[in-house]
Image 1 (cartoon, one colour):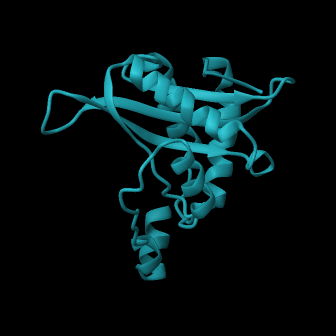
Image 2 (cartoon, one colour; image 1 turned 180 degrees about the vertical axis):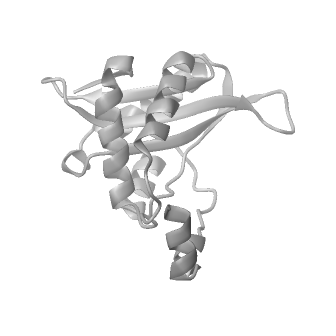
Length: 166
């Protein structure tokens, strides 16, 4: 298994990972627009290894099985930099392997190379929260809180939701 920076040739595989990710998350009734994913990836390829990073894990055969995107930015109250996870996903068949810890370590090293003072990572999918918590603690992270969400789309009357889709 190889961890590396994503390249434009990875785009289709990354779009597939994004679609898989969305289908699995707890609040998965949010539609995915392939063109928006494509546009976002194009922007990330331009920024890759600058203020933003897009890393992938690939098998020996060249199949992408995980992706991680993050950024480094200044705190709103300080001149120091923080690294923030934007999104990460690991295909179910590869969970519990060394891939996730290796991706996290690679992100931390990238953040260090950019001068970040801290790295913030979280779980917003609701998937395997306890297992991820154990892994993150083993990697030296401290649990700081939680993620909370309310699905407003699910609360709307059906007619409003249908009008949005049109």
